[in-house]
Image (cartoon, rainbow, N blue to C red; front, top):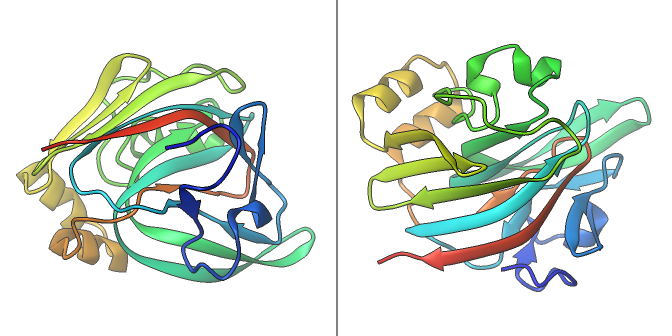
Length: 210
């Protein structure tokens, strides 16, 4: 999926700009530009329904990102930071959470730890390395089953129509949770999240599953 040198297999959610406004490529990796004034999630150009995604990732201290999949919609938010207003093109879907687990964002709840289905299901263990170190991961999506892997360990497995997931979605008063309950879209792009912090991805490949 990633050749280590170009964005040829990626796009932004709205297509209004290219990925280079929010991301840069160097040393064979894609790295977010933390203070970009238009912060865009990085979408795959192709769409996927059943797949095995393999990738390596690294977060800076305090950084936060994730892999979004089964994306039901996208939105452009106007946010503010110390430099003023910026735009954020984000993805509404399931999120394989990737975070500095020692930071406040990663330690405040098991639902926000690396490997979690963000906001809904916690990982069975914390398998990510400390911030600044590279991790290997897999995201496997089959017809109705999903697996999150970190550093060779399966940290989460769930069914898309399981009671566990449906109860977790129903408990959240979020519009995105309603969309995820319905799951009207099954074949979607995969997104690498830009979350106002410095993160990097490399060695990205995907296998389409039967």
